[in-house]
Length: 133
Image 1 (cartoon, helix red, strand yellow):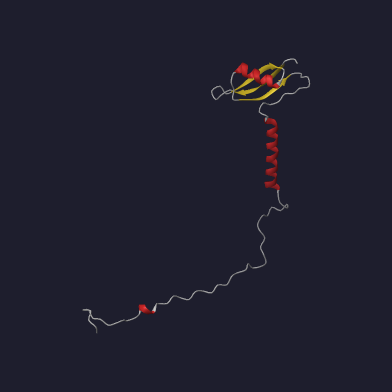
Image 2 (cartoon, one colour):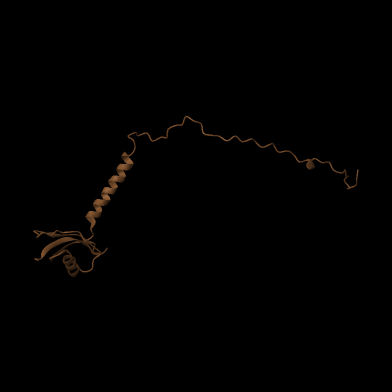
């Protein structure tokens, strides 16, 4: 198989940032190896695609982001559609009032408190000197 030109982007590190990469290889795994050999160690490589005429093969992404991104986009549309457009077509989401009264338990009130009988008991009569009256 003839070597093809592969182009893409790679994030090297926070000091270098993102760079454009270009290598020549016959297969995608070979292109990834060439990127590492030519540009050194990298954190992430993405959008690595074969450029020019190809013999039945196609480029692909190293991170597999395009398929995952499409799936996430579809999930987002479904969720937003369910939240924004769900329901029976009515924009009124207030609960309807019931024509029946809710059952109520009847409770008898407690008797008023009374003063205990011993509190008013005059008891034995004593004088200031504690002598009986």
